[in-house]
Length: 192
Ligand code: UDP
Image (cartoon, rainbow, N blue to C red; front, side, top):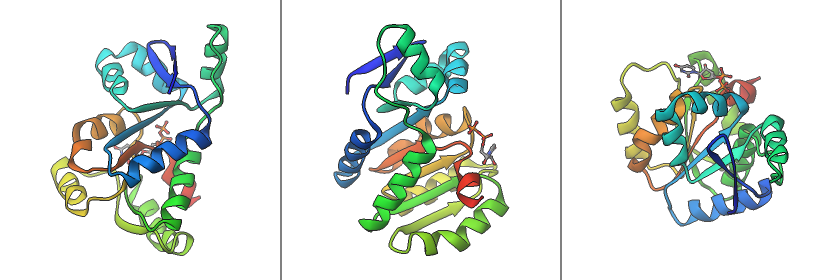
């Protein structure tokens, strides 16, 4: 995709629908993929933390998750096509995954949120293969990563908040041949 760079972050300049079809193709082809849906807080944090910025820059797709980023791009004279949010992308991938019998691993949010999702997600997405649902307050990454590696999910959704979720994904994404995306507070919204 063409990109528009705002504060050293290269954003994909495309529509949500086009991005989604690319992500779906990559999942079908078992390509390792790291998606960052960057809101203005993430952009500001990356601006101030070079290590986090470099880690974000290695993502395959960075989407503008906030009108502030669209405004910034417009001021630079390089308008972005549209806002692409983490929550919308998550929902779209879950619906598509359900329709195509894909597998998904959910890591993040509080234990009670995960317990609730364990109840409702199979009803909402009966044909999605939910191979992992665990809260984001673990002490030892290795247990979680070993489980993700064993399950080989098509999609891993990490709701650990930033910068934790991007650091986690950057460290461990290569244990699968699928998609990894940080989704912030989206599990709380899914459960809400
Ligand atoms: N979270 C987590 N582990 C942590 C810290 C946070 O699982 O160590 C979860 C938290 O329960 C919430 C999400 O990460 O579900 C962060 O949501 P928030 O809206 O604060 O983050 P943002 O969307 O701004 O990244």
